[in-house]
Length: 341
Image 1 (tube, rainbow, N blue to C red):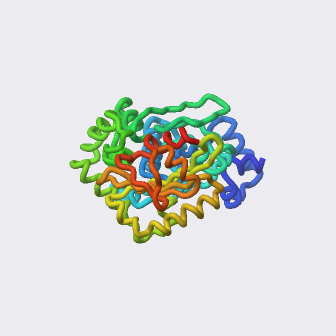
Image 2: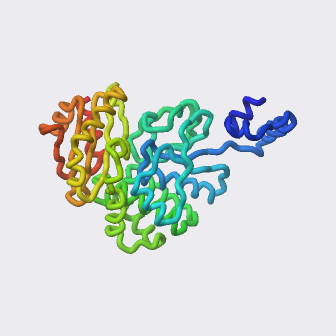
Image 3: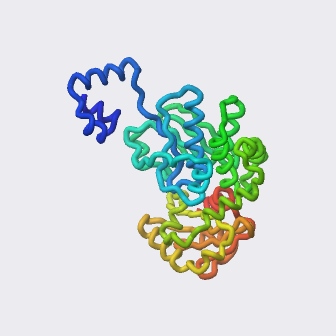
């Protein structure tokens, strides 16, 4: 019986509760008759960006307002400066940090691949997925899987709020709007769709944001504070791992209003990419420094860089390459690399 209680409450709660035998029996009866439900955690990917954090918070709000109970937004990594700026602006606390999926009920937002998800996800239960990325997911049973080819998970959520007429306050509207602006790079990314723009326009007056471009620049400036960050922090800021035909690669993307701010730190960034490659036993480690003003990115890479040269039909010089017009990792980098691996 103690094991059942531990599975439902967690080790820390069992240790602190000091449940008596009679209490355990009552607790089990509550489970049997359905008066107790385990918490369902909603979270985005590792090294979370603004869309991952804001979509988790918003989806928990949406479900709670529509009568679901025991729903809790969470995160599985540290919050970056841009997301912190957004949460502070709309006066919302950061979600709970979750580090292990063992015995947890989980709803995934803004990702579905296991390599980008919580540790020990396979030891818990994924009950739903809400995402806008390529699908690479397996489940033993049938679960709701909501996916759409839009620029942000927040766009899917905003659509759900409006279509169901679920109450949408300034705070949640602000989070959804911020996530759309961030993931679409102020609507400049090729992943941007008309639906992203439509939802942003509908959210803006509720969030009391008059100038979307100015607000977007303000967000990216908050993200571009590199002085207090070491090279490891920068590389881990928005890093995703991929399995390409059995080959492990890592791609980090950071957005800035001026990529030259990071050029003087090229050597230490390359050193960190190499350290990460060896530590994680990967074939290729990449950093995309995306300049939202110049609308392109500086690509730094270590490892099997010939694959990058083949993908873009262009030579790297001193481990770097400028890619004009490349703003989207999802649409302009990952698919090209998948073709050459």
